Image (cartoon, rainbow, N blue to C red; front, top):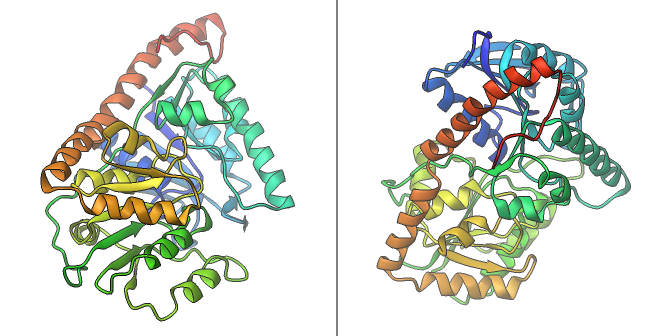
Length: 391
């Protein structure tokens, strides 16, 4: 791309080995571009003190900054902005990922480099005075970055139009690029227990995933052979958080199985073990896990939220229900359980066409290649964040 030290600098609060939909997304982009011969840097925080501040990870140069404290899920790292700006100045393309409190100050420090902000979703936090202030601060910071961006990437046009920042996004050079998803067919049904209906959830066990509504919906199914498989780690918060609500809700129902964190082939085996995937989020940007379920011929039921419903809308391979509607969720699960093998195979084929890793990488690489000469020209003019690329 250039004679800079790095072709792309990706900037975000958390990166591998931290596990979330956003970090998996960025890790696949970073490592995928590196595998294609690009020099990729990632600037992130040292969320675990055991991690090195600098390392080469799967061909990606990772820069971490120490964390002094954590507020909610947000790391506080005094050196983060300065290190991000430093690496940005050594890179041909700068790609911060929002929502992130620091994204605005970082964008303000990026000059004579194409700035491509990937906006995953509007920040969602539980209600409360402190969280309200935090949301407003992040919205202001994200708005600043978007105004300065040469291009804005969102996970889908549905997500973009549903964002509170849509009035700003629509005036930018924006495009929908779906997250890179893996084809996980070929697993073994190791988690299957009998011939009954098996429903699966996979992800972080946090407030915004709506897992309590899934458990209640499952408990409406009067079938002793049905199973609910929940994969993912409890996210520890002060006072116990959602764990204090979910464990009593599950009680002694042996049909509900907590599988813990799954990795690699365990995830393939998880998808091979279920008949229906459920993502009952109350806030969602896309849901890579549901797209990967679809790619493995498993239909998904999800909530009718902008962005989170995109895989179901784009493939027709699932159902949408209102958030927090337990009855509608239970009915949708039963409807999807009745799909024929032919309908499942066709739905999986459509999903694989749309959401592969290569499709996502191609789109990012094309965008970056288009923007590099644009920034070279605009730097001569002394401009920043010009809206000249046709969508």
